[in-house]
Image (cartoon, rainbow, N blue to C red; front, side, top):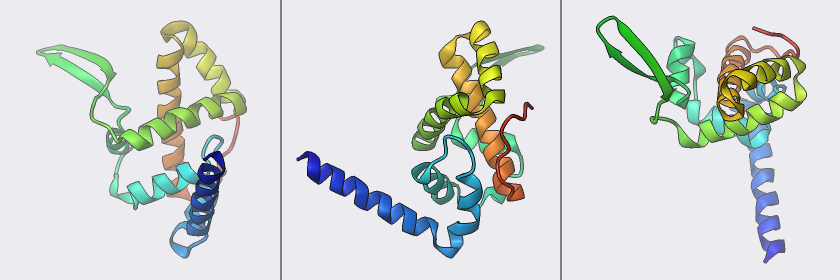
Length: 154
């Protein structure tokens, strides 16, 4: 049974890698794969679900699509930002949270930011903030077609 599952997983990964080599995804995938935490599965999931990054004119719109945007409770002059919204792209948000854990381990700048956030907000909330930063970096890399640069704090 284990061998069957392993063979299916390898076949799926082979299909994903061949899809990444197709003309439509080839140029974008090499930039996305330069980001720590983004592997073939996450890259192809992003490219197939988002399709054209230019359809999101701002980062906020892209952020809302993925689901890292905070909920807001407003009345009159008072604005209260709550937890991240329940509306989300379930698969992509989960993949980006997992990618954020890898990013924290491999990018020294993100490690520093995570450790500072963890002191204030706790580990789980801090990783969501890192995932939001990762999403911003994904959008930048994708739109500008430049490889990811480690160690940049923004």
